[in-house]
Image 1: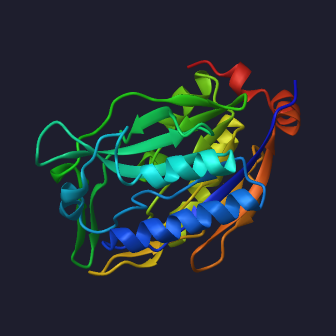
Image 2 (image 1 turned 90 degrees about the horizontal axis):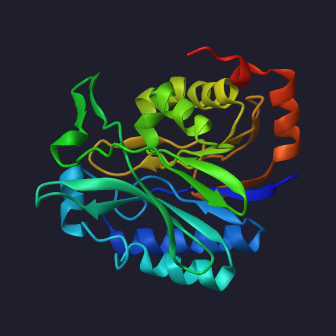
Length: 270
């Protein structure tokens, strides 16, 4: 049975101004839905983007979180799924959140949640370093969710560098991967597209990658180039600079044909 899914990746330039972030995120989700998307994906940290400590005051529960309430209303109004790329979910203690994706269904209900497994603890040189684990607790469980019969594997940003997660997702039935992100300018310019295409090719899966873009204050720049990729590894569309969205339709028929031509998933030994 062929399944088709119209998908949109939203690109934002979020800051610590929560009200402005949520207003722009909602407006872009609405526009994407009105353009025909059935699944709309927001970037990582769409509601508040700054240092991880800046997010602690916004730590919230999944079911009554203020970052999600307007998206729940919009999902019902537009009859769409919305993947809230990530929110600061209330964590195990006052000093930590979880970095959590929340899939909202067309009834405005939570369909799935995923807590980011791989945390961004890196030294980039030039005095730039990130220690996400100082204020974020890692998740541990891969998640695959159903979107109108299309199996969607959930991940967040730095997860992209860990192919074993995506193999676990495809083994659980994923047909597409969602990768909301805030990829740094430093790494994104060289690694973003090759990694997205590699995850698509390795697993013969579609990819929807919604990124933050631009300058966010305090020396934080992100790469953007939000992208939809097909199972052959070909970018279907790429967002230009600035805020906006891109759309494409995922289709299991050509995906099944590619998987038959290149049966690497069936031939794997490990």
